[in-house]
Length: 464
Image (tube, rainbow, N blue to C red; front, side):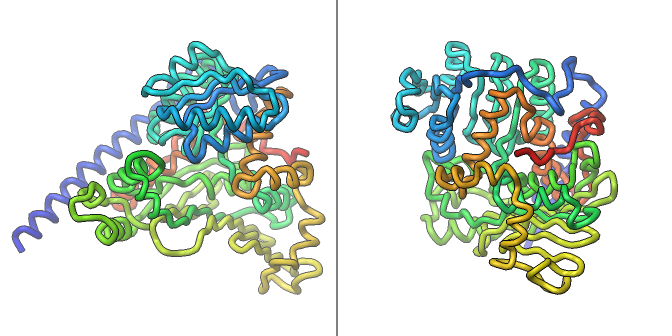
């Protein structure tokens, strides 16, 4: 009993120290709002046109290799360099780019064998755009250096790990006048685009509430122990307690609600996690007692639930769970005064019913009942690119559509569909949730990465 008491005491004092550290970190990062970057606001920024987009890629593992081959297939691109610490991954991706590019990518310079080869690549090749698909800890330093070297940065989710890194990204983007976009592919899903259009058309009235999630059981990634996603994500799960991966569900509902774009803004967050059980029991069941996964002290709760309150008083529930044995879901729910749109499965309830499907809001319209709704409100972008995107693949085509739009915007000089501030706001849920959990659910204030300029940013329009 004495040992148990001492262990609990040590755990409580450790958590207290962690909560004080998180509180001071959040406060310092928020103070940046009163310190101008010395650059110009990037909310609706449109870069000078590029007839051909010269592209370099950092990280060609499971995620980056897909980006490389899809980018190589898009007209107006030239893949000029690929960097990864593993030589075999670089060679594989170069061969694939040459194959799908049909002769357009014959001079791809390889960089591999060291942790800093990517810096050498940026200095030597001078690309127009760099796509970053590495472990989370590298996202911010690589994006910042990319912009300083004169290229636009496109970063896998999340855009960064800490609030300070997010401020550094914002400041560098404003100072260099280079894009830094977090590549939130879910915003290009067919359901998400349909719901965006329905919200813009006012079909559910005034939006009051949304729910977003990333619920995806991924314990099998622990098999990747020396290289691969599980090798670096598993320690994150052990030492961090919060919502570490918030953006897949959040990005789309934030754009439905025009958060950070002229109408409303994130304000405060509270967060709670369940006990940490799943990863520890999985490690005990599948690995020897002396295995490194059994040496970890798993602190990250299996399920995290965070609630966000906006400036206008609207609410968002955001959940994350990559551990529990349950079906995949992103929730993707948006609720208004005239109805509700929800995901998994795709379903719609409108006051008075959905024409040709239901008689009232007491029933969901779903499946084939939604055909007429798709016919009338299918997003124009999906009408134009949906068939091609589905053929090219990548999470049902959303990856390809995202990459196609990035290239299209760079070639035409149009603003990107996601700006640097959105990437930081959506990613900020992670460190804010960690701080709230450490402090017993205390509210955390969102930094205003726009420095009050979000009021002038235009909502994302329904582009064709």
